[in-house]
Image 1 (cartoon, rainbow, N blue to C red):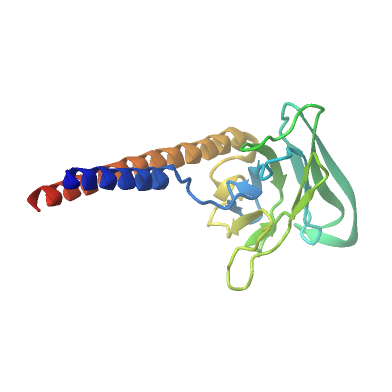
Image 2 (cartoon, helix red, strand yellow; image 1 turned 45 degrees about the horizontal axis):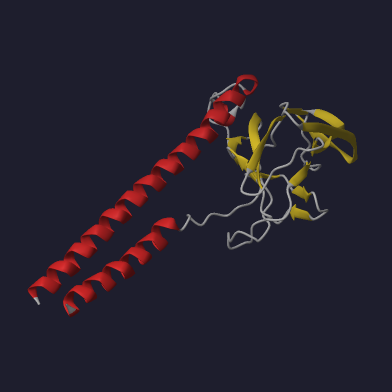
Length: 244
């Protein structure tokens, strides 16, 4: 009788532990990011600002991106998104810069998406705001795009911190694009010069969706492996108790 009771208690403990492990979501940094995030210097980029809602008591209603002024962009286009109004602001530079041999005195400064009444990014949701930009700077391996996230209760989270010298991610990292040098014969249009910017939106959306599906498949595989390991553990304990 005592052996049976011990076995029942053991199974209960293992079951609770197993569900705790299997039910725990993968820990991931939930912050505003650029997806995809790698492009070619001197080219164009079509990507999405991925914005998760991190508050349990308020939804996200506004996103404001600050564009670089030291390496200004000559083209900025937003993709229409139902329920959100996009506004791109252009203004004079404090100091003219030269791009491709031409002096530039004005540049795009900000992109702002504002939710229409009744629209917001709710708890446990995220939204993607697609944009096409160019020309990407040359001789620079990263383009940071500080972003402010405003909640319906007035709270503003400023995603503007640069990574430290040790490469450690800060608490509120700025979304950034990694810029790779041009390859021989590469005109720089599209991500790594492989996809024309004008036609790359759908490709990148599919890439983002594909990465999400892959994550779900890997998560499912992990759950299956965990359940299998739990079953082996229970079997081993029962066998050892029978021998005893």
